[in-house]
Image: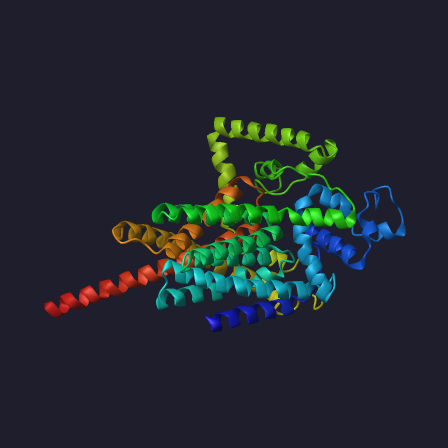
Length: 470
């Protein structure tokens, strides 16, 4: 495993150095960097509702990028983004607010930690030496994983922290004493809560963990584990609400409730000419301004739209099939998961020459995409094989109870991926958002490869045995 971790770290750092981004043009990243910079510089006035209104023609406001709204406007749209901003504050306090490469290096170390966590989950689901070799090969050859760090957003860090929390929860089922089990459960969920602060949709992982715990508790009849998990989940969920309160206290502002969750389902069910089904449009922002930020009115508009779309799909099943198949393909069948796009979404100190130019826009781009496409197809096939093999093993070993930690880990990986799949069936579509859930398939795919190798070895052994008998 050590060699794998070193390789993954070095490969990411080399790619970050090759891209050499000095600025980053992703709108949300720009807004979060701007908000963090205001806090770090003590310029709290930048959070005022009156700061740089559209009518403000001052030199200061004219110098701001057009795509970056004022901090107050941005967090009025997305108050939950105060959590992700804390990571920019952390990185900015150490390396400077606009140090893109330092932020990416932190991402790289987080992804290395994620690889270690996936390795541990692989061990818990039953990987042997051959299975671990398969897992190492799959991870080391996954280009989207190695390019993920260049996305200047806390997705990678939040995912790594959340999965680490799940690994802790898994270890709780191996604790020898009741109190140590409870403490580890609490710690695991709190770590998960920190990850969810950085990316709210990773609450899907916490819910998958709860599903795994429920199944384990039903089997082992240790009801106190379920009670401890529910309480810990509640505490972790409350923790995710803390950043908004802290930022509002520091800035002396009230950002309100922002946009309702249904707004992202509105996006996910929307269709606009020139874009793939379910991808971003300005509809939620238009509704926000049209209703003057009234939460209830926004919710009603979103409900009406969702109901209208679902009724339309019900009466037009062919159109519904086309819509969702195209949307799912854009999320799960795009082999780069947008990592190539986000690797070049800014200005490069080297002008994207050399390796970045060859891989992202030169002759190597088509070859890279072809390789990633094949790799993705193989991964899906192996993961499906792994899940089927696990189900068969459960049926065959019904009389021999499975270890709690193994049952939890297997359930979690399957439930978390399915949760992500179902979420992004209706949620705003974006390949970079589905990448973390794709990565959860790697331990399952390694188990599938392990199963194939075992079956092949047993088949060869039988053939040899028959030949010797003959």
